[in-house]
Length: 67
Image (cartoon, rainbow, N blue to C red; front, side, top):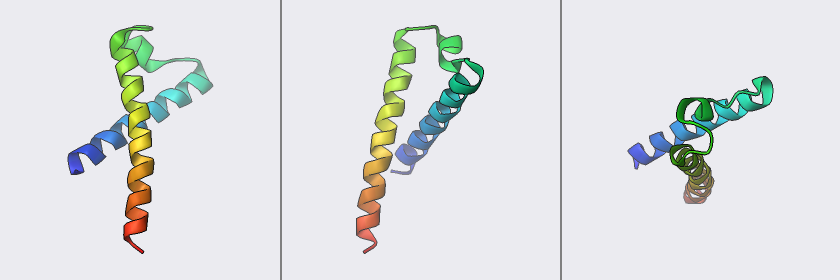
């Protein structure tokens, strides 16, 4: 579980920094690194989205366990 939690946090940090750069500097690091619209870019974006959903549900489950 620790590996999954660490991986999801890393993906969320990468996605957050990337989104910040898109809004502030109009620069998308993932597209610069892997190309615009490539399969790898789509996979990374998808994994970041899944990581967000996972973190929301894992937070809710942990919060209910502590009651």
